Image (tube, rainbow, N blue to C red; front, side):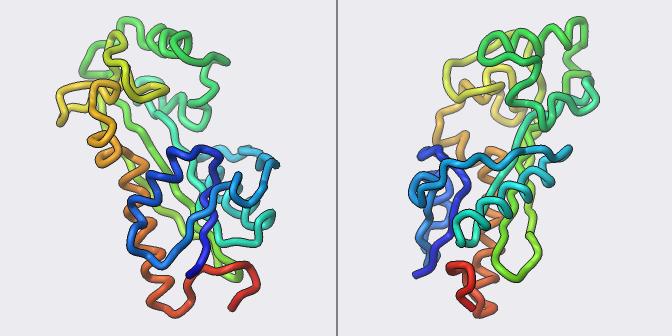
Length: 207
C-alpha cells in the first residue's frame, strides 16, 4: 500500500478523488491528515504554474508524492479573466462577486458570453519532473444567477449539453462532468502508469 498526498484541506475534494482513484493500491492523505498547516503561495500566472508550485511545495513539506490542482473560470469576452484570480476576482466573494462578473459583461449578448471552467492537476514524485493533466468544461455565462447548488460561479455557468446551470445540476451529475473530474480521470491514468513501471508512489526517498 502506498500513499499519495492530495493537497487540500477540503474533505469533499478528497472524497471526489477517492471515488475516481478507487481500486488503485493507494492511501490518499489530505493536508490535515499529515498535519500541514503551512500554505504554499500561489504566485504563478497560469493554472499549471500554480498547480506545480503547490505540488512541489507540499511534497517538500510532507515527504510524500503529491497531487495538487488549480482551477478557475475563463470568460472569452473578458480575455480569459478572471482566470487564476477567480477566487478573489474583484476582491469580492459570494453573491457580490457574481454581481461584479455580471457588471463586467453588461450589454454583452448571449452568443458572446462563452466561458469555460479549467482545472490543471500536477502530480509530482521524488526524482521525476512534474506531470500535468487538464480538464475543461465549456459553457455560457447567464444573465442572472440560477440554482442553489454548487458553489462559486456555478449559478452563472450554463452548460449547453445539460440545459441548465451547474448550480441546477444534481451534485452527482456535476461531479461526473466537471473540469476537476475530467482532470482527475486523466491523473488516474498517470498513477496507473507509475505502477506499471514498477515505480509506484511512496514516501520520498523510497525507491
